Image 1 (tube, rainbow, N blue to C red):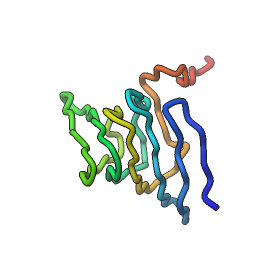
Image 2: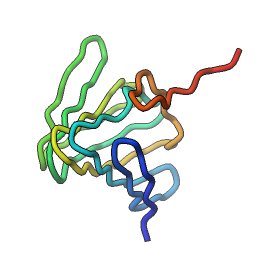
Image 3: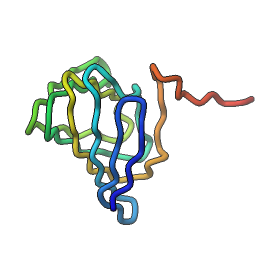
Image 4: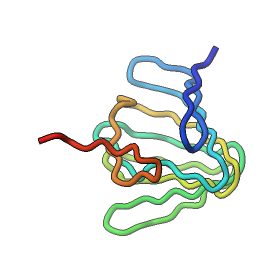
Length: 117
């Protein structure tokens, strides 16, 4: 049985884990967004298998990538990104790196951790 983790934007399902590699299904509700985030040592390959999403990629400038069903995108380490569902959508994520390696820059659900000095 796959592990399902509820999220404010929908849920993620862990399909397979081995070492530092993970295969997940992200189920994102229409109009919802994941955090604006990046990963120090984790890279991700995403493919939309249902619905439609837009991914904001921020390097020197902002680039929006439309991700209709069947389209894919590679997110390199340290690339700032955010996924927005334009319809109920499902995205398969193949990630290499630690799942805890997430630096949230903006999150409409209040999940940014602040550091105590």
